[in-house]
Length: 140
Image (cartoon, rainbow, N blue to C red):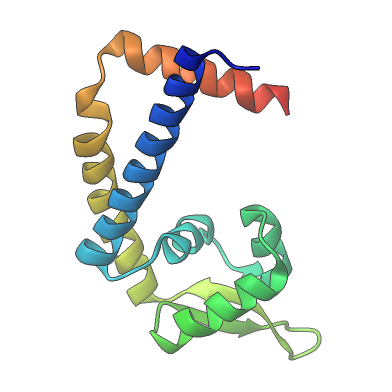
C-alpha cells in the first residue's frame, strides 16, 4: 500500500506527463499540421521500408500503420513503392513534402520540448529523470 505522500507524488507525476503530452501534441498540430502518430512515422521512415517493418519499428499493429499511411499518402507525405520482384505496392517512403514536413516538425517539436520541459529543469534534475527513466526501461 502506498503512503499518502507516495500517492501525491504519483498523481502529480501522472498529471504532469498528461499535460506535457497534450501540449506537445497540440504544438505538432498547430506548428506543423501533423499528429503525434504522423510525427512518429516521419521520424522512423528514414529510408524506404516495408509496411510490416515500419509497424515493428514503431511497435504498432500493422493495421494501424496501414490506415495511417493511407491518410498520409492522401496528404502527399508518403508514397507507396513497388517491390521489384512482385510488382506489389508493399513498401513506403517519404515524399519531398514528407521530408520537408519532417524537418520542420523536428525543429518545432524540439523547440517545444525545450520550452515546456528542458528549460524548466536544472542539469541535476534532468540527470535524475534520465537515470530513473533508464532504470525503468531496463527493468522491462
